[in-house]
Image 1 (spheres, one colour):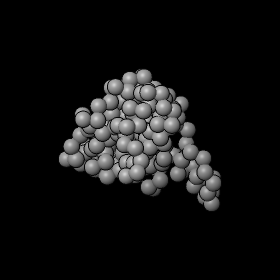
Image 2 (cartoon, rainbow, N blue to C red):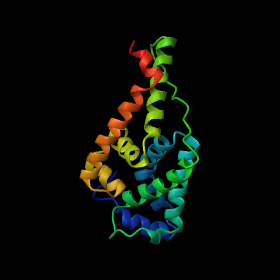
Image 3 (cartoon, one colour):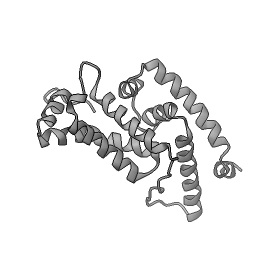
Image 4 (cartoon, rainbow, N blue to C red):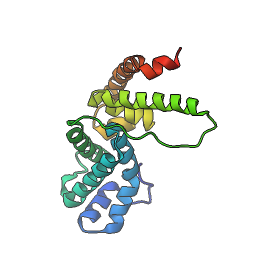
Amino acid sequence: MPPDSNDPSDAQLVARTGAGDEAAWEALFARYGKVLYRFALRSTGAPDAADEIVQEVFLTLIRRSDGFDPRRGALSSYLFGAARNQIARRMRSGPVLAEPEEGVTDETPLDELSETERLDAVRRGVQALPQNYREVVILCDLEEMSYEQAGAALAIPVGTVRSRLSRGRGLLERKLALEPALQEGQR
């Protein structure tokens, strides 16, 4: 996520984006677009909503490039904050599950069905977590960010990341223990 030492800084790219530099916008999108999309997808469960959220975040950055102040924090924190706000607005009407990802496997149809049911149960469990726990579970466990990276992205201390992750994992474990699809797979 962070740029190479030879690349322009996030602040420089934001300033250039505000001046209409399309290449700067593309560089910012290349740095942050995919991780923001995955975060939005895993938070909402809906690919269309995730696309729209990322689009809104970057449109806001373009329209109001003066809204980002590098003295107040990292661009990743600003972008994740904007994404979190968009996600919260959409989630007020309830989560929408994404369609299971398709893939080619050597499993039998019954095995594939069981795995799909387990993945759906995990998706539902993650999406049912309170937002503050869901965010750290997504970033640390699914996006494999370090505690420090997640803390920077969410603008919270590392200790808060650790405690929310622990609590979120516990809640998720209890939610999954109640899932019929997972209980049947344990028999």
